[in-house]
Length: 405
Image (cartoon, rainbow, N blue to C red):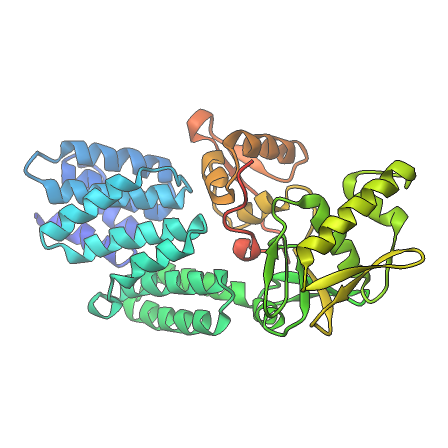
């Protein structure tokens, strides 16, 4: 390794891409191309970074398997940053195996962390946790320790375990200070902000207020009967009943939950299946749907008939509340992912939401027409972004994954 390449590599490791480019910007040998690609990625030009890394991988000879594997790992990180979640995971796994075989444990571990981050993004928490279990962060430098703890915190937050999440973020902050890289410190601060921002809206006894993730966790452990509009479920301390494939029944349960301890008139309940007037046919359908709701709720709650309509009757809980997104509107799930400040492809959103790509594309086009999201690029390179909305829900409380269309 010549002195310019070594100096550029040190600059990149310290989070200084401009200094690295000053040393290798005019070179087009394999090592320089790789370093330029990483520098462009750090500067946010992900398209250029991807092209440079691919050129570097082709330029390395057949005997330079480790260098090619490192380029693949860097390309995988660029794909993750640009939310190209369809990037082939098997290539990353092969690169990790090559690096491990040649003794490059640090970069092999980083490849595994990238796969864990991808699994976390698409909601496959058990698999992400399994990937982490094979790695010991104590043996790695501070940069990798930050990555490890951020993933641990992300898994804990998605599982509504805020104390472990705060502990992991504190460890990440400490490691980021030791690393001395401003971008890492900023990433930890951004992750910490999630715990101090409204995560959901609580509706109880006719009143509503925004609550933090810690309050959501406490609510679910309180024993109250929770009609969870974030994850399309009804739950108490003993049972969770999913309504993800029963939208009409869930709409009825939510209406009853919001009115508790009062009742809901029959005329209001028939709106759950799109009716405007409660004629005799709609009343008959309502009776059928209420009977289905009673059967599904079982020992958790009953649905009692009143003079005006129906009311929810919890069997064990003393309180009934509704948990909803902080902002509710059509296509809220897609908007929740787009408020993370990153650019998403429609295929990545489809994978994260568990929906078909065509359905997601129609949703994005509808949101773009309403001026709520914007796109750039064309064809396979097209990416979507949404402006951050103050108080908007994070994807933490979305179902993962949602049912396939």
